[in-house]
Length: 359
Image (cartoon, rainbow, N blue to C red; front, side):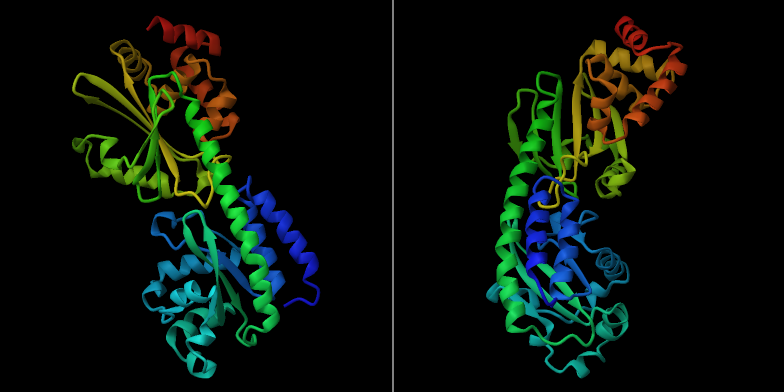
């Protein structure tokens, strides 16, 4: 532990306040906790598998270690069974409580070949109550770090309510932002469906702003589309947020033409404490709209992404609004429109919208 923790506590409090509205600040909070306890790394993983995935809060070295933990299947060889339950029961737990003989512990393959080379020899789990259950704030210490002191335990009791308050407030803010995002489509023919990292929908918001819980991926697209598209769909859900991946689909459902645009939830909206990772915008096209889109596709060679962009532009959305919606940079939208201009032989957004109206 550092000699004067007061400054760190104040900095942590301020950072957690920022984290309620900016998800990236949770990484900074983990860095401060590392400094506060004299640890070598920190991670805040979910206890719920529906939340696991690429958006995990922690220090850079711990995130890298977590990737190796999964890819090299160390999760199947982790001998620390019971540590999580112990954390639930007493509020924190260390592997010293399971393996008090550190010399014997260091000979176990998990410690010898994975943790110790990373200087993550001693682990402490701190129970954090989030709106989605208890999550373990995981601190790793150097190989020779002494067991937790009474002062360390007092620090744990100090930061727990700070994290819990911030997590609750962050979830409230994130849910409100998601709802506001869904209202972007209110009064249109589109339904917004929100999904977790496993492709199980959490809820949908229809054109009137009403929410419907527990819709599933299977209801989004017909069975005949095939498993390959479902794989592509999950690629979007689990991809790096910085890549701004999206997928667009168009198919017939009876006499209706259905468009589905799948995007990651924009960075300004998403948050680690909510299970929503991506959204799908499902639109039942009228016969006229279907004809317009087919004309853009077949006559002008526009891609599904380009067609979606044109449709949003025709609805009165600006390039900046479209960029925020599609989780891309405004410059990317403008570049996409330039390509559309070339394909449709128009020279401005006004001409493009006019062309769309004449189709």
